[in-house]
Length: 253
Image (cartoon, rainbow, N blue to C red; front, side):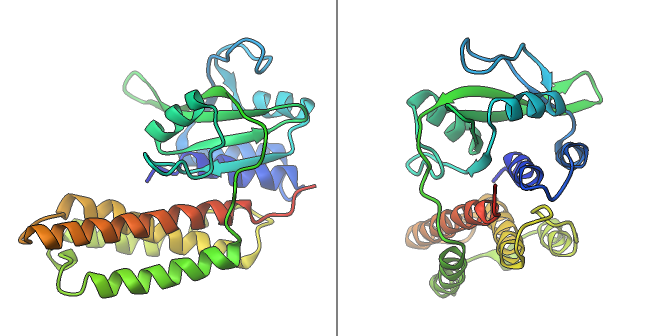
């Protein structure tokens, strides 16, 4: 699961709610992914040219009544956090992420992609799309945390004697350990402690799901493979919803 969109949502909302300044928010976002540019914009959606730096884009969006950033983490068959239209949904599902930007008179979707130039430049390019009006259904934070815990227990029970985590390479176990010891919060200033806790747990479990996929099927028969895949899909679904709930759990003006 990619989390390119998460820093923009977290720090963008922290800026909108007055917990951080614009420069701090932009610096925090770009520390995660490099320079951020708003890409080519369809006529009539935003008054941008191609390749507007993030700081300038946020200032212009604020002038258009920017009031919220919302995280979307969709997959095929589960457009979690999206509200259409089809073009936006398709682009966000292919990227497995996106951001809904609420303006005074309309809503815009931003879908990220890697921006690589030459041998050293690495950044993020955001493609804007028109978005339907309305607010996507966001899980309640306490309910998302409860579902995360219950699903983790259920999945662990389902995978007893099936999962092959023990056979993962040492590099996989190191990656999980490094994630747990990173000390870098996923959310920004202004989010409640529960949101930070849920986001941290969901981020770790998202890494578990991602690392589990390459090992699927080793030494297992067909029924075990199907059971493992089903359990990972279930865990992935609640992880994505927990991340969305955590990133929405900030009081905006």
